[in-house]
Length: 364
Ligand code: SF4
Image (cartoon, rainbow, N blue to C red; front, side):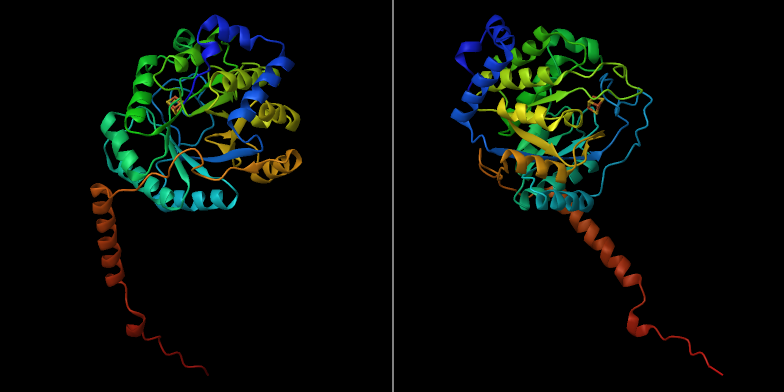
């Protein structure tokens, strides 16, 4: 992935961000056309495979157990349920599924075995599979890669300076380390941030500068607008103006010409015209489906209608990289074997229909 050599200092990047908006959009649209098909937008579906009860204290997140929100905690979903949701997402035009679990970090337990199996199954359906499961060590990253994981999401959220104002339970460096573990395992990286949390323009650019200084910037950079949820510390935050979203999308597009800029949370608050400006400014990916983890998102049919108006088409999977191979995972195979044995035992203990004689009732 390339970085734009003209914006490798914070001063230059900030000057770009502050350019007259129409000029900034024009520059971003020009870069976008040079590196991407501007009429294609990747549709990605986010499935919350484990919801709530997270021990972290991210101030924006209703899934943290430190805050009192209406959120219903949900244990890890069964593999079949996730595969069924992925099947529907594919039928609705999504080429990528992102599975989100509200964990601080991945643990080597049966839940992780199930996630590995989900990755195998969805990769087998010919979709790009992404996961966002919290912190990840090198071995776990390798296991996910072998299962067929295409991308790993781990956001930096904001600048290093502002980060400590929104999260105290994990360090910025730990996030960078997780990104490096995914990268070193050969997994494509998805990492971005949230605007509207009370940060300054310098903080927004500070986050982008962290990506500039990485050996390789992320292949996908999601830009989220804060969805202020009642019960979280950021509940009273005023919604970020659409112009700032457009500015952030355009600046990211110009600084990282080859990456995909993803228009993420906060789309329900944006008009169709606002979203169209973001596409013009270089956004080429959206999350589809009525929920974004726990916050609202436009319905599939609303997006279909917007695509129709703008002449956009959903992007096919694996246009930017090869489909990973799914390799055999011993733990998943052992779990499948155990399940098959259990099912066989249950089937054997049920009366066979041939043995069943209905009671004779005499009718008078
Ligand atoms: S953003 Fe992720 S890590 Fe932070 S509280 Fe929410 S689920 Fe936990």
